[in-house]
Length: 135
Image (cartoon, rainbow, N blue to C red; front, side):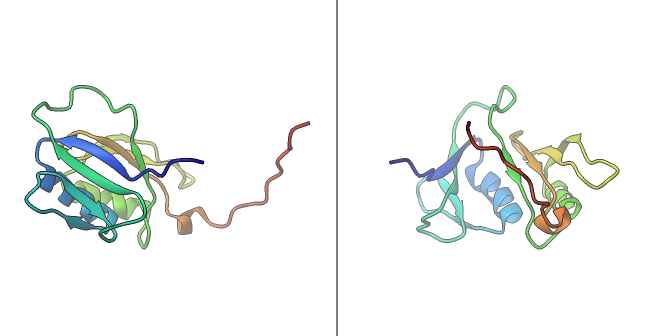
């Protein structure tokens, strides 16, 4: 028995604008009606996990204790970072290394932190590893 994560929820000032930012980054569709809440998901209804944007009157006041790590599909990490910046993200920290590894930490237009990692293609094939099971 377990639980399915239905949405990752963002409290925000402008739900439709922030959802538009995340729709651009993820390539997912933006779904809304007369309700002030906005959903970003590949389809609607959606059986997987979506992003839910709920307008609240207060602004963000502290660092996020949870954030999303994004892995690009169909583009490189650096191209994804440029896409995010061009759409209103702010650079928080650049942790890219000389060997191409690493990630970039950004904030969305309302200050929510997220990271962009290397794509699977950039990571290459995983090397076999050994795992010791309990004794």
